[in-house]
Length: 271
Length: 169
Image 1 (cartoon, rainbow over the protein chains, first blue to last red):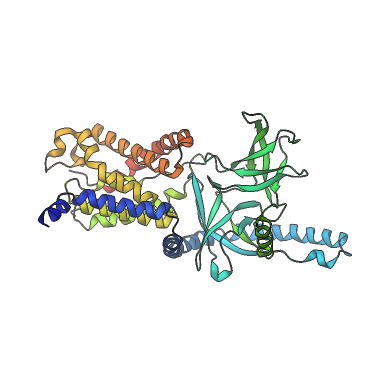
Image 2 (cartoon, each protein chain N blue to C red):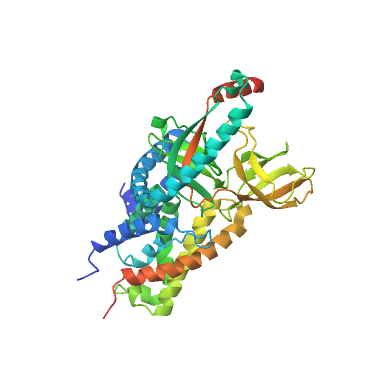
C-alpha cells in the first residue's frame, strides 16, 4: 500500500498531465453523444451570453448601415415580387406550397481564420432551430447547424475542412461539391465537376438542391480559375464567394418542411 | 505597488483570455491571420512555482478560451502540453541558470528572452495547427499557418509582454 501511495506521490505531475490530456482528448474527439452535447450545451450557454453582450455593443454602432442595407434589400425584393406576380397570376396553387421556411437570426460569434471554422447563432431549439438546418444570408450560403442548444447554436461554416455542400454551375446540370482548402476566407473550391462541363471564368455557382438542407438557386460565388485534376477527368474550380465571411450581418436559418418525408423515402429506398 | 503579488496573475490571465477572445481572435490580418498571443502565459508565469498547480492552471486557462472560441478543447490540450514541457525548453534555452531557485526569465538577457518567446510561440502554433488539421495531407498548410501566424503573434506578444511584466528600475 505504501508503495502504491509512493508511486502516486512521486509521479503526481505525470499522472495529472495524462489525466488532463485524456479529458481534453475526450472533449475534442469523443463520439459519445451525451458527453459531447452536455459539453457543447454548457459551453454555448456560457459563451453565448458573453458574445451576445459584446456583439450587442458592436451592433449598436452598425445600426445605420444595417438599416440602409435592409431598405435596399426590401426594394429589390418588392421589385422581384411584382415581376413574379405579373407572370404567375394563373399559377397552379398546389405548386406554391411552402416547402422552405426562413427563420431570421444573427451571428454573435464568427471565425474565419482557422482550418475548421464555426459560427455561433443567436437561435436555438426554443426558436425551432435544430441540427442539420442550412444557414444563409442575402449574399449566399454560410453553413449548416452542427449543434443546437436551447438558445444558441453552433454552425459549421463553409470554411471548414469537413464541409461538403452540393452545388452546381448556374444554367447547367453539372453538380459538384463545395469544399475549402483552409487558406483564404473569401475563396472556396468546387470539386467533382466532370471535364465535359462547359465552364468558364466568371460563371455563377449556386446551390444544387440535391440535399434536403438547402433549396436550389442560393447564390455561392463566381468561378475565378479552374484546372483539371491529375487524372484529367474532373475539374478543381476556384470560387470567389459572393459573401464576405468576415462581415456576415443578418442571417436566415432554412427549415425544410418536407425533410422528414424526404428522409423517410430515402430510407425506404435503401432498404 | 508590487506587481509580483499572486493576485496579479489571475487578473493578467483573465485579461489575456478576454483580449485573445474579443480582440485578437476577431482580427484577420492579410485576410487570414488571427494572432494567438495567449501563449505568453508560458512566459509570464513564475518558473519555480508548484508545477501541479501550474499545469492545472494552464489546462483551465485553455479550456476557458475553448469555451469562448468554440474550439472544443484544442487550446486546453496545447497549453497543457506546452506547460508540461516548459521546464525542458527553459533548461535548453537558459542552461544552468534555470536550475537556480532565484532564476527569473525577466532577468535573462534580451536575446535569450526573445529566443525563448519565439520558440514557445512557434512550438505552440505548430502543435495547435497540427491538432486542428489532424491530417498528414495538410502538413504544408500547417507549416504555412504556423509561420505566418507565428510571426504576427510574436510581434504582438512582445508588445503585450512589455505592458504586462514588471520593469526593474
